[in-house]
Figure 1 (tube, rainbow, N blue to C red):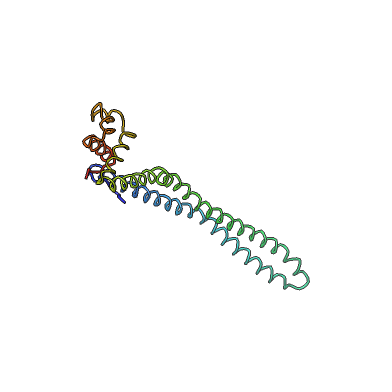
Figure 2 (cartoon, one colour):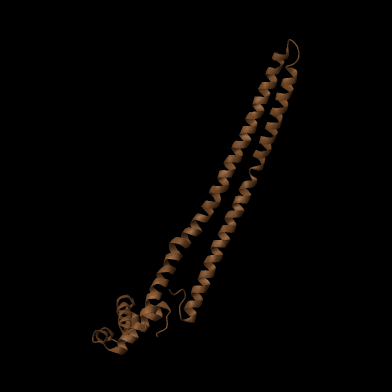
Length: 200
């Protein structure tokens, strides 16, 4: 398996792109964490609402219990305290619901922020990089064998632009067909250069 090209300019370009991709992913992870932290701060009002509502409900329930001990009218006096305590509990529930919503938002927004950058890495850069690694690995493995040189020459004839092939001479295909070793070597070299590899 070959991770980088033999030729310095190509290998340097690959290395710089790989480093930039790693930095790109790292920066987007930092952005996602920052978004998470900012959204989490939105839960503070809900926490305060829950705390205040719960505290008021407990105090009203306690007061209602004390008022309920008043002889004769105690039961009638507890009704407003019970109603107010229930209303305070509703406020506390609203605070809890707001916190739950913020927690979900704190998961969804960072995931959305990461989705596009990671999709670009996973579906654009990574397949291209793996394709090069596979092709370069096979080319490096066969470049030292005569049959491998012939395969590389055939690959060059099939995939190289006509302008590049024409630079090798007008009869390059005929020379390859007749088994001319110089033509085979020139074509194989063209394919290896495209991959950033050295010939032998």
